[in-house]
Image 1 (cartoon, rainbow, N blue to C red):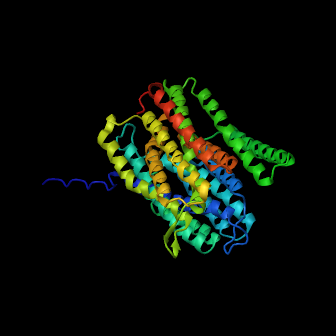
Image 2: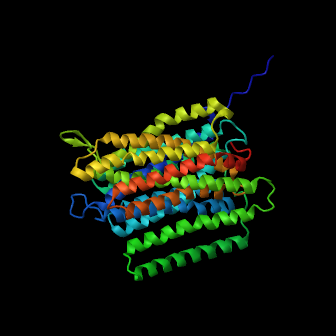
Image 3: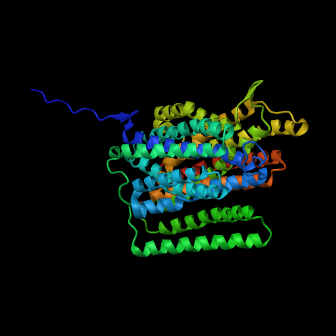
Length: 494
């Protein structure tokens, strides 16, 4: 009698089933984040006298706030990665991060300005725990050298954009059409659904991320507390000094946080390079140097891309003709769904291409260089409609923005999932969470710089588009010229 064959293990589109749990958690987390983001700048600039009043801030101030806040969202993963690696493990970090994020959105749903700002801070802190560590869990689902790894990250990335697509439609409709705080509350409901799904799907993870990789000593815990106090006190002192020098309180805060965001990666990379001396991996130091190239390229990319929630949001509201019929115009916040829709369409295409090409696919350095040129071009093309608007007030056709989002989608799919995958392979042993936090810190740096440029050039949008787009194209060309050097540094990482 022939023994029965074991039942084949269920998969998620050919990937481990645990990926489905992480896919949907990240989808709902991104729903909450992008639902709020679609409303943020529009709420900040909305006049107090309108039927649905906002905070009535100047456009330039709102752009700077958005850039600094978004930068802070991607700065906190530095601490979140360390906490996961050394204290509580990846799984608990994701859980507690989701709880704090949901709390932040519900605080923003309260119609009071103090709770609005506290809610924003809570979201930034919660994202620091969740964002880098859920990506680290995805990386741990695959063995080293698994050809499905990049495809898995691309699929995971599609989940991000599924949530990003739906969020502006729902939160934007509620926030702009009825009440801003109702839209913020809807974002909190999304994160809550993600937490419920995470609890239900826990058994599929099979212990992934349950324990910290390198538990911290008592001395290291004390050092972390001291560093935290120094940062908070130093930031408070800097804000006070800038206020005494005549800056408005909001501007003093954004300036101080921006300085912190730009200083942190310099110090952090210096510490990591010191730590690679004597490492077991003979290529460790070279891989960190290669990652610095990827970090810089990603920062420039996000400098342009992340202005979708500020510069492009106001472009849609103030410059673009959004009328569908004589009696209906789509809310400007809905335009934030265009780029995620394109990602949903094109992510499977890019994933299939990388799977088909296998080892023949372009290396990460080439993908980065091409992504930078494409995203830079997306801003340069907006110079024409912006110039026409400045001349006679004619509103631009919506197809300009659609074209911009299409270009940015192609750039994003070249850079983001592949950069995330490369980061998990370049990370020194025991530092996966912190290295992933550094990857997101590139977004922090880029978003902060983009916000400051957008705020400073608010009176001349053409200059803003030309400056940001030109920097991205130029750096892309520099990376093309350095491809051989970067590939040599990356060693066996494709």
